[in-house]
Amino acid sequence: KSGTPARWSVERSLDIYLDAFRRGPGYVSLAEAAKGTPYSQEYLSLLARKGRIEAVKLGRNWFIKKPALAAYERSKKGR
Image 1 (cartoon, helix red, strand yellow):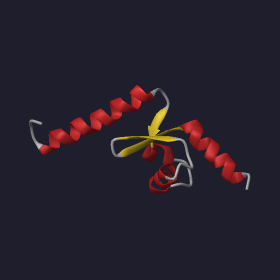
Image 2: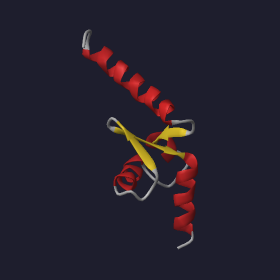
Image 3: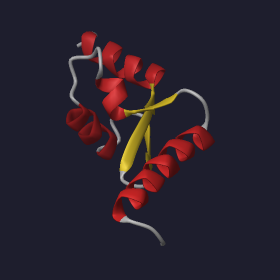
Image 4: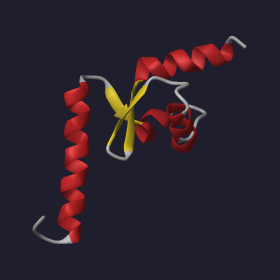
């Protein structure tokens, strides 16, 4: 790697962003998915790690499709 640590950070962020698009349209970060829900990013990450929601991990970050989150929310309301 060449450049400064700040540049590495920007490059890493860009790599994560582009990887999400390579996975297909509709993927959002867990931080984005948590907006407008009663769930925090940390809770969604826990669900993803346990396999309770459909999510993909790219590097250190998890991504999910909004319909998958909606399905999880519906399953919780049905209880």
